[in-house]
Amino acid sequence: PIQQRPNPQHSLKINEMLVRVRSGVDTATRAAATTRFFHHLINRSYPNSSSSKQVVRHLSSTPFGATPGQDQHPQDSATVIQGPSLLTGTGVHRPSPSLFQLPGLRSLPLWTAPSPPGGDKSRRRIAYNDPYVTGIVQLLESNFSSIKAEYLDAVMGINGGDTKIMAPNTEDDDDERRQSPLQPDYDVNKRGGEHASDALHTGSWDWHSYVLQGEFNDKFADRCPITAGVINGLKEDNALFGSPFSFCFFSTLMGESTIKAHTGPMNLRLRVHLPLVVPASASDKNKDGNPKCAIRVGPKVHEWKEGEALVLDDSYEHEVWNDTNEPRVLLLVDVWHPDVSMIERERIGNPKCAIRV
Image 1: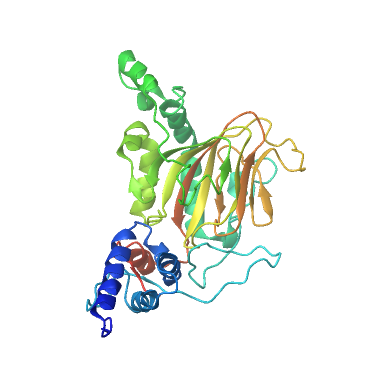
Image 2 (image 1 turned 120 degrees about the vertical axis):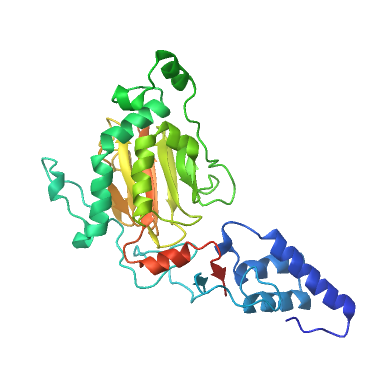
């Protein structure tokens, strides 16, 4: 696979570089391993080296993780192919995922409109009248009270739900639960992650996750069985997004905090917000003339309403702010974009998903 050169020391150096690159970039987020990534990595380590160019050519001709002479990737896995450059900075908001994009999917910043005056949710508008998105919205909204009660109990230690469901049978057990609430479980200060704070947030932002980068949290399910059951139902219906980019968590954005403008890594998912706690002064105007607590997706600014699900495409640039002195809490759930077919969902979610660039 690598053409041998007369100088054996030179060939040894090339093979050594390949081994180090492959072992050093064994990450769950395999889509980061593109030719462009390897090109910059190797050229920084071996500037002006003819060996580095040969290594990049070799990596470009084989699937990620393959060894020389190995067969092509399994037929039941998807392939990521480096595509053309994208035009951005035109002043028009369009989907601009940071990692990769599946062509041909319907695209809107927001897939839900606010309830009409009077709050009649049965008259809410869902983009394209899509029955798949409508079903997800109705499922989450119908469980709003129970999900909120579980958040208050498991995170805040406030038992405001049905005691037959939300609390153990004895006062001692109840006291123990209140003394050991769920702890935040995602380090938003971790550099390089999808939600790394050095690029994204200011203030305080806590996560209490049921699904974190595709992995399920049993402790969450023990403390929040109704919420977990709702999400498990989405999984059984093949609606819950399945990949290392899949998340479901209680998102608590404290007062005087922001999440800066950014785009998601792909357009394969839709992100659903079920607001559980919205600050009383959220609708008041801030110094920019916007609501004090809101989200902007593309050109649209949206205020959350408790119990009213918001569905957005996070491959559009979006940002969040809470300029009040109260927390904003929501359940965030990633679901498959309705236009991604079942066979595509299976292959994209296959852990053997290959990278060919």
